[in-house]
Image (cartoon, rainbow, N blue to C red; front, side):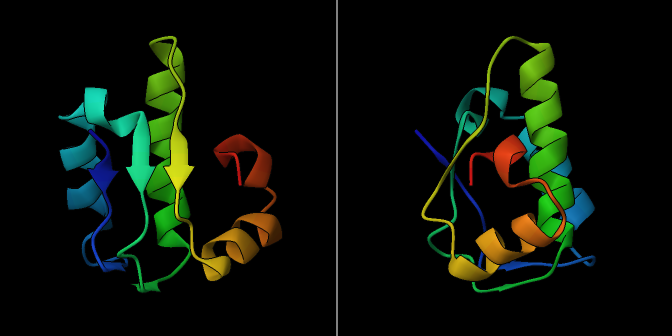
Length: 85
């Protein structure tokens, strides 16, 4: 079962979201971004933290339904390949 990102991911909720995801590592292997509408580059920080933890456990992160803005941000920050975008 995928981990669904909320509609909004900004500095206000990023730390809580990151911690919540780390408590559900099994579901983090697939992250569904279909609800994600209001976000900034903070979402990349969360995704990268999850990817790092999963990789240390021998797994990887799959990001599904990434909005175009997320793909553009990942490209600007040079992390597209790290997140499979």
